[in-house]
Amino acid sequence: MSGSFDHHRIGPLPSFLATPSDEAVKQVRMPTGDDMWLITDYAVGRAALADTRLSRAAATRPDAPKWGSVDLSPNSIMSLDGADHARLRRIAVAAFTSARVAAQAAAIEEAADALLDQLQVAGPGADLVGGYASPLPMVALGSLLGVPLADRPAFDAAVTALFDMTPRGVRRRGHHVLTLIEYMSSLIERKRDVPGQDLLSALVQVEQSGEMSRAELINLGLALLMAGYETTTQQLSLAILELLTGDGPDGKCVESLVDELLRKTPSTPISFPRVATEDLVLGGTTVRQGEAVIVSLLHCNHDAEVFCPSGKQRHARRPAHLTFGHGAHRCMGAPLVLLQMKIALTRLWQRFPGLRLAPGDESLVWSEGLATRGVSKLIVEW
Image 1 (tube, one colour):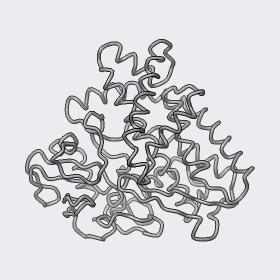
Image 2 (tube, rainbow, N blue to C red; image 1 turned 30 degrees about the vertical axis):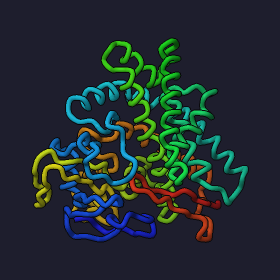
Image 3 (cartoon, rainbow, N blue to C red; image 1 turned 90 degrees about the vertical axis):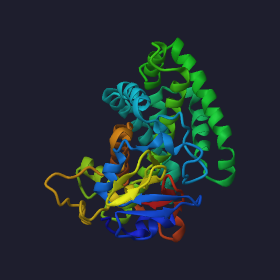
Image 4 (tube, helix red, strand yellow; image 1 turned 135 degrees about the vertical axis):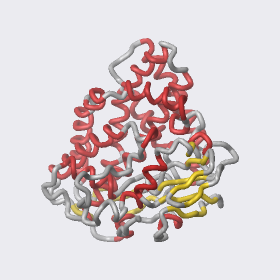
């Protein structure tokens, strides 16, 4: 069953996640008023994420139970099932090569050093979210997609606006999406004429071969932005906060440190909803056809039967955490996230070995959201 975690370090959670429970599967009410089945047990959650009887496509239908006012497009790769999803994922994975990800390291390192230079000049009292954790993933995405340097300011502004969760930002979300669609369309045309070594150029070549439509190409580009910006920004912010309020890096192997930070502090606390296409049993609970299921990745990652509170696994081989999901919809961008976090955390503590959270309640401001969690301000000293 799900273990306990320090709510002061986890931050605010929706009421259906914050309430402790010994049930592996329980029914909860979402902010929309719709009921869903919430899974908090690691084994049950992992199985559910890979169960083809639980459909992402069905969850985007108008009559399906909803968790919020904003849902993914039914044409997004994150909303597809079966053969449609498998075809697009195969194309995306083929373009998202390990060599192409590794090639982003130099740009990320250069950007990290430049941002840290700016923080050093600004002096203690700097905000690590606005000054480091937020702009760094934008550089990585721009480099991966091949966004020209001259376009970066407008591109960055459009992507940032898309994730503005203020009431005004949410109202204007449709406008921001259209702005990005228009930009993506123009960038695709330029890649068609002058291809590069970037991910978008590779996908344009696939589209030209007839394996993918133009609409699918645009949707895939937008999906990469949706999945790669805010979640990475928040993941990096949460990792830094965990180190500031815990033991710090303390000479740990960076790979194992990053993996443990991802397990303990997932920026995506719950999976996207899935709807049962037939009656099935999950953890001894019967889920009827048409009912929706969500997995608490946060609770599963803290399952005391799988992960010890100390972080030392009980099994000979450490089980994989669920921060990147599991099954057909496991996050394709995981290698890029890992690369960014390794570089970002290493560079940060090399530059500021005495980094600490500034005193005062105003030094830490939590973001409140359903799909992602994190901090909007993190004031530090060194």
